[in-house]
Length: 381
Image 1 (cartoon, rainbow, N blue to C red):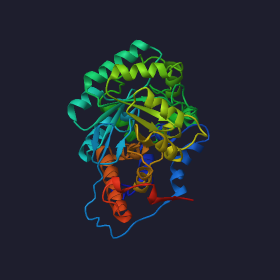
Image 2 (spheres, rainbow, N blue to C red):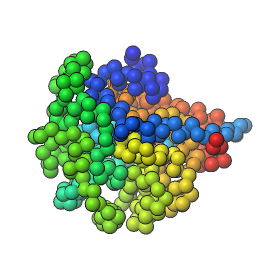
Image 3 (cartoon, helix red, strand yellow):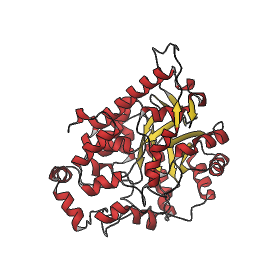
């Protein structure tokens, strides 16, 4: 299978599976517990139907949106995700370059493998920083200061990961940083020697947002242990309110799922919220963001920018979210499989296909701009 054979999300997933060692593919592909929420995230879009309009004069379609003060040419952005240079040696550099080409936002994680400052110097497209709140308050202050000095546009505090989700696929393979694999995991690496050659012959793996503060190279640290041992479960709304004041700019909470929490985000001065369950990787059995979108937009959509991620695979998924009032949507696996499959050309192909799906879908819906979409376009079953 080649990149040219990839025409949708599932094709990219298959090609990524061919090219990645099993432990790394399963790190991207896996989720918490029985992965019920992971599956529901995409299935939730099937619970409503699009109601198209016709004869609307849709030769020209404008896909642009403004979210948290950022003008995006596409209503979908590349959500911040960890460890990208494990999936392809270009990692965040490939994603940033592709996002810049399509005029949309990309994100860098606290567990990113390229420094946010380097990417800011190279690309002017909007950039968000996914911040994890650590037990070490000095570390938190230092990371926020680095983000300010780097020129990050949007601070995105993840609030659904104060402890690690139970990702059983990683437990079976022994996936950790640095690698401390089980025999089964080692055997899966041996079956994909091309990945190993690329890993060893390119820039040494690092976590530049953390390396100056945390020794990740000593004892093996699984991602689950990082969340459980390094992050602070005592974080409160007061802590976040202080961060919002200190940041003094666009500030978003990622992982909001209830109306009450959305209202609280408004009260403390956040400019955006991302409805998210971390792609099903944290609390299995939790609601899908699309299932919660309408009631949260109805409650706070006129006071704060409401975004959602988790489960986005198709342009029609994006159109349904926008119709319910989301200002934009984020995608994670949506671009990670293409990144793993082919680096920057893969991410560009995925974004190009999404752009084409959105333009086609908007025309078939009779919508010339995102502002033309509304709940009237939908009927729930």
